[in-house]
Image (cartoon, rainbow, N blue to C red; front, top):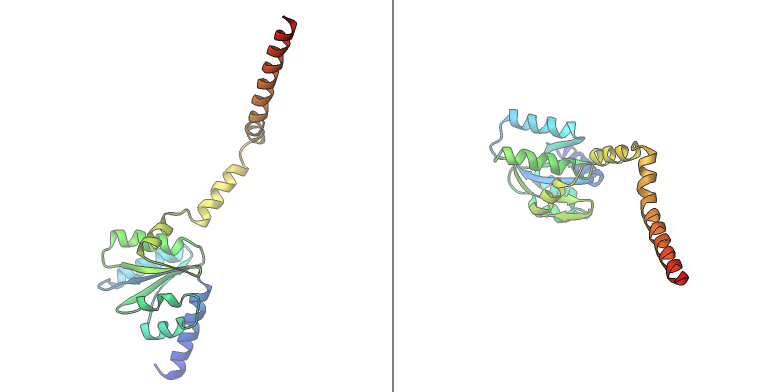
Length: 175
């Protein structure tokens, strides 16, 4: 790789890391091409990417960026899982690492926040953007009468309590 190719790679990597909402740094030592292809396809389905990195060039791309804290993770056979969806890369990488001990999660970043392994695992447990949208859609599609009933229930209870109180006060005044 000549100097101009390295400069292009650094610029491209810098842009990818800045655009990604989530970055998961992994070691992939011992994974076969079939396993790497499987992981890449799962990430692609989730809207992410899995890229093997050149450590020296990636460290250079991280210099001066918001994710510069990741620099220490780039040694050995390193790859990154990235996505614009806040949890997609973490979810796919963590689930894949559960089934394949050759993929080791080292840490990552969520926005500007640098995360350790536990942070990535926690991020992976959150619902994805699509799951949140589906829940919101189901709430919107709930019949309006049911929503109105739920909203009016506290007011109705308050009215019944006030009515009961006023009728009991009226009985006391009459006596």
